[in-house]
Length: 244
Figure 1: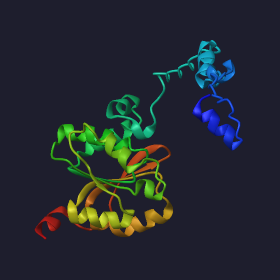
Figure 2: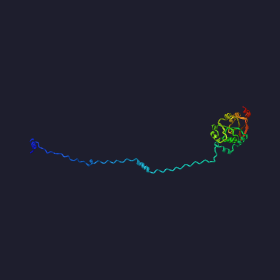
Figure 3: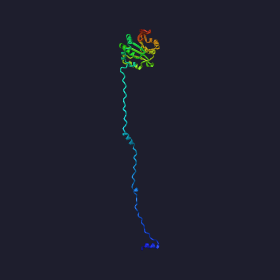
Figure 4: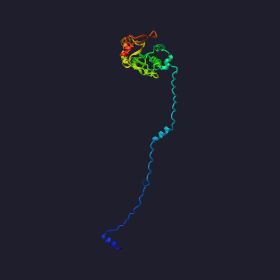
């Protein structure tokens, strides 16, 4: 008997077999060991898909625009307005032949026209008289559109284009314009009064025309559609005026 067992028997202690614990291998379930595959996420709706669908969809055909019909060209034979007539068109009508004939006989060196009407008379007279007298002095008095005249000042300037001389234009009331002409150009040999002048204006002119005219200055008025020339009521003689 071994000593240890003997010792234990004397002590009354029974020896117990030594139990050794063996570590059993850990059993792992396949669910815990194997990594779970990542869950597939639902693909987000791509906004570009709608764009692609829209792009593939054929667009509705656009209706072709029909060109607007071109405006009809104005008839070339339309008569031009009185305010834009040139010298040649005015001369071809011959509406001022009577006045031009009278003035051609008088052969004035200076002419004053009070009231221009539609503006066509001035080019006709100037063109006829300037051929014989290139030194012709010609003045017109009219307020044009400022008093509702037939022709505008700008259009009247256009009618004077191409004339041998350039008339002096006085855009003032008739009576005051006569004084302006006297200071700028001196005395006149012939004075043309437009038929449109009213009685009040004619009465004012009677008091001032003698200042700008000689005793033999011719005043031309239209009566019953015909131009008539009468002598001025001025008492100023040419020799007396020149001496002054």
